[in-house]
Image (cartoon, rainbow over all chains, first blue to last red):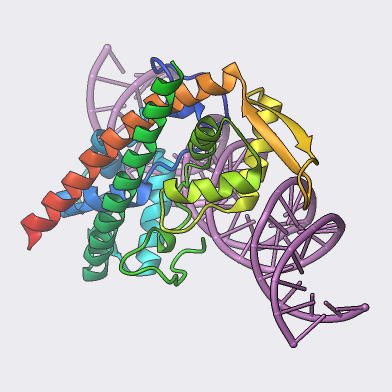
Length: 130
Length: 130
DNA sequence: CCTCCCTATATGTATCTTACATATATATGT
DNA sequence: ACATATATATGTAAGATACATATAGGGAGG
């Protein structure tokens, strides 16, 4: 989001801080792991619960991530035309996809730990000044 | 960092996960708040303790962030030629800069909270599969 | 003197990611 | 007929990272 852009969320918001990483990749992986088989639109809805910022994930980013995952061998897909409405591309995780989720789990633990240190340092230096 | 790039860090690493956000902006602000007055190179060294990923912050990103902060009114700067060696551009936080740090503190708390939820969900779904 | 390294700032640019707009298409409700 | 929900896909500008490169002052060692 363009820096300084006004959004509808209350208080200082991640939306105004520039293009913060949205963790689309691990969120899509977790949603697929939960749903076992899912299409993009369904993942977009499930992902709202897991969004890292106050803004919902961009569906375009989700579709592109899924296509990239398929190129990388993390998911398999096939068209589902059995239901009424537009056709759905159904995705399921491969073993490589599950492994990638495991890797992300480890990385997330590291990132959270580092962010805690940063945030605590931030609070401390603000308190010292006041 | 290019996706899948090998790095020297042990185990699954944020370096291999694509261009993860490095939180350069809040890190530079915190370093400035700690050091009161500092130049870019000094911030780069202080920032290593606070880096969110295993890789140190890109010094180029730090210099560009400082110039942008000045445009935005978050810091003031002046050249320091009193010491031997190359001239240093000394930065100090303005009141607006301190306020921006406060905003980042709030955003970081939110982001950490959301990431915890994501990571816990990740671990749970991995355990359920195993 | 020359080379190497550290200090210090700055720019160039390819790639990645977000943000948002837009296009296409099927089906349902009013 | 029209709006809305479902569903996927592409286009593109702006933001951010990753890494290379350029410029310069100063100290250590051969």
